[in-house]
Image 1 (cartoon, rainbow, N blue to C red):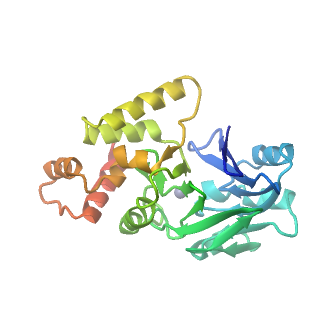
Image 2 (image 1 turned 60 degrees about the vertical axis):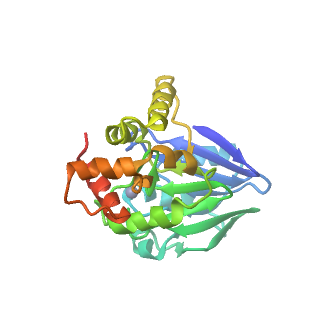
Image 3 (image 1 turned 180 degrees about the vertical axis):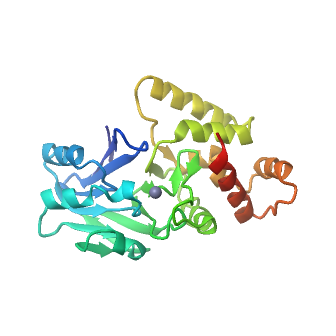
Length: 271
Ligand SMILES: [Zn+2]
């Protein structure tokens, strides 16, 4: 587990054992101790943390409703129940969570103590996907990963994912910190280097990630600026990437959306 601190906002990032490299997050207001639990899987670990830090659960927020992002909702709400606790999801996902839930959509502000979390609607990995922006920290769920993006195999639409990344996430300020739903960093960076063998940012990030994990640590959260330098799913308009794909598939339409879709399907079968 790691703790981050950003202007009165505390963030705990918890790697869940025996999961698909999932991270759970707790974000809290340091002044009021109110917190939001994001994408809970392991209620015991989360509830222990909440108790030890003397936090009050105001919201459980699901970036999306795949089972590995909502399975801890009900135990958390049951144990940490207060008159103000609620589960929040996008309207497209409301039927996948318990009836004690409310909806949030693009532009909504979620107040957690004196902290504000802005909702950005980022469909594509699945129709109900939202990103949560607190100050310069973005909880991107499975929309974006270190050097990758979510797949579209389970209710996803690649065009929608392109528009979410191109229109909503890539334009965020370069120093926006990215808190992802899963750690697939090493394999994603190897995929990036397969496409762009000369990409020095990808090479040095891979070396950094290998040294972090060799020492038993998690890869540090990255930023939008860093991702733009090596993440293929933010580099669909970089000539080297387009050329490489065109060589593999001379018929390829090189518009950004088609390049993005080609990248997504290549990554689906890349080993
Ligand atoms: Zn997912």
